[in-house]
Image (cartoon, rainbow, N blue to C red; front, side, top):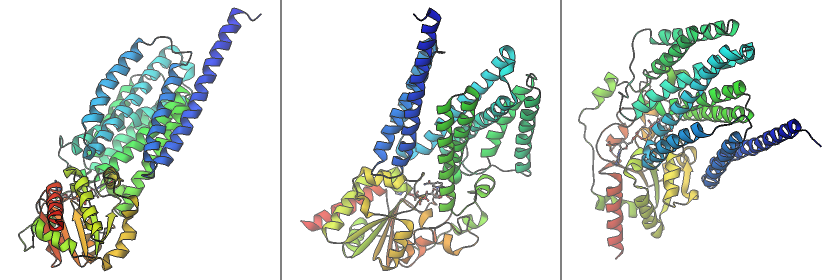
Amino acid sequence: MPSGHETVAAAVSMRELITQISYLVAAGLFVLSLKWLSSPTTARRGVIAGEVGMLLAIAGTLHLPEIHAFHWIIVTFLVGTAIGIPIAVLMPMTAVPQRTALSHCFGGLAVGLVGTAKYYLWVAEEPARLTHFVMGVLAFETILGYLTFTGSLMAFGKLQGLLPSRPITYRGQNYVNLGLLAIAIAIGIYLNIVPNQTALFPILILLALAFGTLLIIPIGGADMPTVISLLNSYAGLSASAMGFVLNNKLLIIAGALDGSSGFILSIIMCKAMNRSFANVLFGAFGAVTPKALEAAEERPIRSVQPEEAAEILTAAQSVVIVPGYGMAVAQAQHRVRELYDQLMKRGIDVKFGIHPVAGRMPGHMNVLLAEADIPYDSLFEMDDINSELPHTDVALVIGANDVTNPAARTDRSSPIYGMPIIDVDKAATVMVIKRSMSAGFAGIENELYYLDKTLMLFGDAKAYVGDMVKAMAAENR
Ligand code: NAP
């Protein structure tokens, strides 16, 4: 008969086995989730796979034998739920970038706090655990966690309009920032050699907090989505490092997936804007240049009312619709669907041209158009639609600005020079729905609006498209 001690040991190893199996399944689900999220047809499945994976990860962790008391876990669960549900429900789609920034902010803080707690606990009680490897990873995790915390908080403030979104710059800024980071890293290396110098740890934390803040303030609001996905990658990397400190394999895998996917997304965004990482991080993009201000003076433009715009559209044989951020803020996607139906009913060839950074996050337009049941096969990526535009009768731009600005192709002095754009100016006629002559996110003039072939359709996207649909429906009767 097994002794009491053996029975307990068997029960413990059985619990650990269950946890490891749940971790393995969760890791598989995370990988599948990322794969499925990359296409609109499978995206919902991807979200469910990610959610089930996370549930398994949490359940597996709570099942670990070293978890003895649940009261604090329940309290934090309730606090997290009380904060998370209102954020998820109340934040509109257009605010997803800042919502994401807030999530990274909490993630970074959690990693930083766990690193701090483990450091002080092990220095006091189990110094043997602070091997060179563990101390090195712990310092790395703590620096990355705290800088992600303040960096994401700054990004949230800029996007939410709580902080000025223009770049805040001063002479020698990059040297100051890199100097702070270098000192933090030097302290991390010193602690690696002499871990019990506990007085240095708060300095390391303060430097990381300051570096995160100062890294983001010189970056303009227009670059925030890219910065947020970069911070996502930092949060993932720090979580992965935390996995090494806590010896938790799932955390290592999930953090690595998070870190690499955030990094790949940043690269995609930089490519779509023809910018380098260094330019995004240190270029102070979005500052109002004297040239942009000077160009904003009065120049002749042509504008038409919805009825006339509807007539021009119905007389066309081919129409390319280019949606942008304005369509998202106006929530005009369902009206756009009605417009699509009206045009298709008349045998007009209608296609949508989707720029990779239209809106405020990659895939923003695809999600909105899918929500309005616009068929996926009508959606064309930038390169595909650009070859069609020279043979298109009407390009209808709905709330897009920067992603259609020909200055990106022609004006070497423009801050968006080199950014690939949708060549709407190559269509026979261009119609642009927006409320005013205001600039887009990059804060610059758009020459498109002054071309002879361009008609400005001034109004809120939802109301204007709705009026065009009404005019077409009335003509049907
Ligand atoms: P945009 O350049 O920001 O222009 C949006 C336009 O929509 C504005 O000019 C605005 O003009 C108009 N608008 C706002 N509310 C409207 C309403 N209710 N009805 C009608 N029009 C409305 O947008 P975009 O062309 O989609 O370009 C996206 C920008 O974000 C680019 O600069 C891109 O580099 C940047 N960005 C995006 C991502 C991403 O992942 N998507 C990442 C990084 C950066 P009015 O005020 O006159 O109406």
